[in-house]
Image (tube, rainbow, N blue to C red):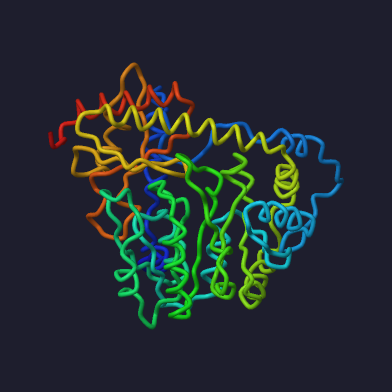
Amino acid sequence: MQTIGMPKISRKGANLPTSPIRKLAHQATLANERGVHIYHLNIGQPDLPSPKSALTALRTYEEKVIAYGPSEGTKSFRMKLTTYYKKHNIDISPEDILVTTGASEAIIMALDCITNEGDELIIPEPFYANYETFAAACGVKVIGVPSAFETQFALPEIDDIEAAINPKTRALFICNPNNPSGYVYKKEELKALAELAIKHDIFFIVDEVYREFLYDGETHTSVLEFEGLAQHAILIDSMSKRYSMCGARIGCLVTKNKEVVAAALKFAQSRLCPPTIALHACEAAIDEPSAYLTESVREYTQRRTTAIKSLQAIPGVEVAVPKGAFYCLARLPITDSDHFAKWMLESFSVDNETLMVAPANGFFSGDKTGKDMIRIAFVLESKKLVRALDLLRLALEKYPNKTI
């Protein structure tokens, strides 16, 4: 009898990193099936209501055909974005904007446009875990430059970043405010990175999806505010967090570099268009009164205070206090946060409740870094946050492998 073989998947598919944010989804499903309620602190899914204007636009959509739209996004949406950006000291035209299916597609398109297989990206650590996945999918290697817990994950020394630049380097890449640390990069830090990009003739990509979420009087400086950087700067943005519309999957790639825009449009045309109805809803969301975002920031400010206070009260736990976004990194008295997070879903509950967190190792490029840390997303209202973090305290008391 002839032996039937098994076709092999690609090395690329086999070697893509697993998301630390979602890799325990199976264990969470099994816990739910056992009747255990899970407090999800693992993922940046806001629970705030989406804007009423967006929901109304969905409910009153009257077109008889849900048709294709322009590959670059509708002109009306891009015009509204230019007005929004102008309020944030970003002066661009609609032709500088390409609407994408979420910020994820914007990043992938940017990498497809500026890199070749074997090229490298330099990203300060910690960084959003999916950056490494996007890079690997494009055949690009991430070079992480470590920042320190003790400095609240401030930008590493510029000399250390410059030392990592070589002929394969195509871009510097940061998230500002940072996911997962919540660090907000100072204007001086951004200026130093901008000067490096110009000096070495490489791109400077900045993911600015958390622009609005700032605390303790912090201010945000956009990569597109720097003079002389127009041909090097690529801004990544999204409607997901700002308007609590993660499922809409509408983002954008913004740059004044016409060659990048033209190349990105080719990729955009190959996937036809961003989702028509989602774009319709997001266009309405931009018209929501400013009070919506003001109230959102007020709510997240309260949640941040609640989360930090609760974490600091747990014996053996250290927390880097975030100045932006809605995440923080906590150092626990453990040696393997992957095992701990899995154990909480499989073996720990109190009154049929447990919590799900994101092990932090996936936010670093090294195999060992971050193994004693978790990322907390403070996206639940304060009462639920208090309960979830009390469960974390109880879990650490019962966990058999703690170090204190």
